[in-house]
Length: 423
Image 1 (tube, rainbow, N blue to C red):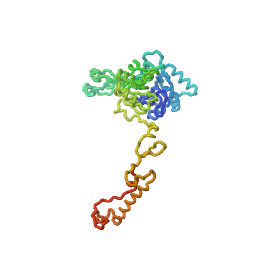
Image 2 (image 1 turned 120 degrees about the vertical axis):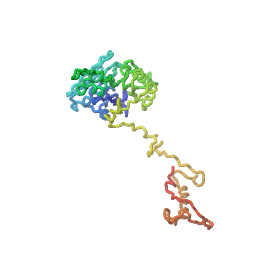
Image 3 (image 1 turned 120 degrees about the horizontal axis):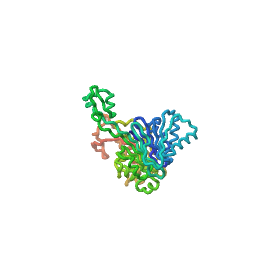
Image 4 (image 1 turned 45 degrees about the horizontal axis):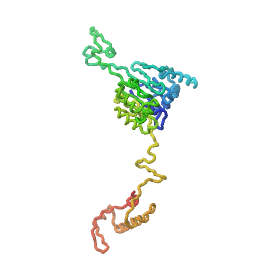
């Protein structure tokens, strides 16, 4: 089971956050929870095939949670989808979809099975597959809202092959029958009981999707002992009043549900646009429950990383290019200060000689000083060849008085960088 957040914004998108939608991949099938604007494009960018969608689950009728639904259905029509699609949501979802299809004059080539949830219900199994089911419970929002739990059915226990062979089991059909919980009769009339060969059933993986809501006991029931709990954390703890007023959760509410439900991993999403740095929310949530992760768009979350890693690979990465353009530091980049001037560090002035007369943009005094030193040194060693056998550091020179001196100074040619361009 792989969970991929497609949109983690609440109410309004930002430059790098899209409207709510989460995809769940399991054994080649895709289950979509909410379908915000641009959800189908995010699936493409996440590396998930839209043709693999089996079911779409809508939580409520706030526009940001279903605004991408009709575009997705139209795309599936253009792709000549030939298998049925299940859409689950509050009562009214069927009327909404059919009205839009009729208005657009679309003649669907695939069937849509609607499962509508009546307001006032307590618990409902909305989808029941061969090896999984999805249940729904009402949440507490400003409008009728539903939370979902995707649950794999218990898997058969492992067969003790060595013990089975000793008891006379040799055919594949016998192994399958034992694994299915059936007893097997051998040719000599011996009965091999399934519970003697097969271990205890293994619980399946589970995922809960809870948004938009204040703290609710039903949220805890949906999230109980889940592998992954995706819970909204629209506001930080200092805006809990705002959260409850609008029917949303704070980071503390999400951590509380995770703690009471004893989930294995809490993933927070549905962030308000006021938070440009979601790690502030992550820090708060982790104070109440650990482990907690941020929902990062297009980044897969695995229940079995050893076997699932690499199955879904994002095709794009969206970055906020507005950050770091000004005021930030980066290697090899020119940084602008006020007025568009280059923000270089000023050259330090020296306290002696003509350096006091040095002015910005006028290097005449400095040039003359370095030129005189360079000329005198060049004239002194004009006849010496650097790097050749004719040069020796022990060459005797005459000083100003005419007496010879022995010099062992090592001579290194100066460059324009050494003389003028140090900042």
